[in-house]
Structure formats: C-alpha cells, structure tokens
Length: 173
Image (cartoon, rainbow, N blue to C red; front, side, top):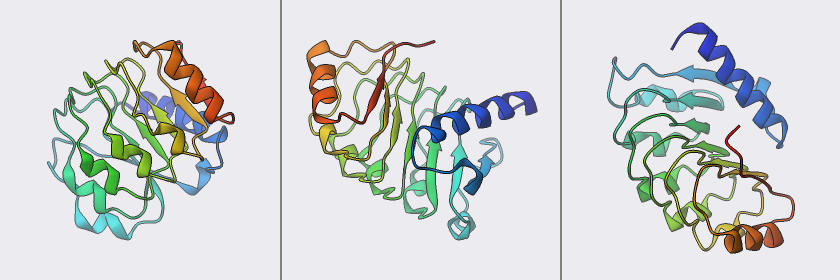
C-alpha cells in the first residue's frame, strides 16, 4: 500500500474511532503484506492493542489464526474477494472495529453478536441483504455502516429503536 493510502486509511480509522470510545493514539497500525506470508505470525499476539489492515490484498478467505490474537481490536479486511465470513471471526473477543467493505459477502454469521466489545461494523458495498437477527444485542455498537446493501427498511428501523446510541450510516459517500 502506498504511503498516501496508508495515511488516508489511518485518518479514516481515526475519524471512525473518534466517534466511539476507542482512542486512536493507543493503536499501533499494522499493515500486513499478504505476499510475505499467508498466516499471521504467532509473535503478533504479544503486541499491545493494534489495528490490523488486510485490505486490498486480493484475499479470498480470511486468515484463520487471527482469531486467537488477544490484542486485535481493529480488523480491516475490506476491498478483497472474501465471499464468506466464517464463525471463526466470533472468537476474536477483543474486536471493537470490524471493516468488511467491498467484499462479495452475502451474509454475516449470527454469532457476530457475541462480540460484546464491537463498537463499529462497516459492511459498505457488500451484498448483505439482512443483518443477524440478534444484532440488537450489541449494546456497545456505535456505528453500523451499511451503505450500498439491500437491507430492509423494517430491519433498519428495528435496529434504530433497539440501539438508540448506534449511528446507522446508509450512504456510500
């Protein structure tokens, strides 16, 4: 990723994090070059809280060993070719920000709502047409970015009612 794209991503992340209780300055930004390895090194687990950017790496699947990373608070796997978000993601219990933008994903796993720390979910430009029915259990959710998805208005209204502190972003701008 070019430096300017990295800076833009960090600025976007900082803006998003400023809307929730996460302090951007507490994160170490990690961009992973997928060409160097196909799994995440085990040593990464000893790091302080950090954001992992796997965006734009032409991934078709999510590396499975990220789930055991206790210090992973932000995961950006946007702009790839990922079609399926497996239930393994639900083991990333410290996850606060999940960015899945611009992947050909059709559904999110129901277990996503067990990630009690989640404050931001962004699925802009995916093909998700319905959110997990238990998404209203995510009491810490502050931003739900769903632009460009055919999610029924009734479900959006229900989420607004059950999560009044959650900002639902429906535009893709």
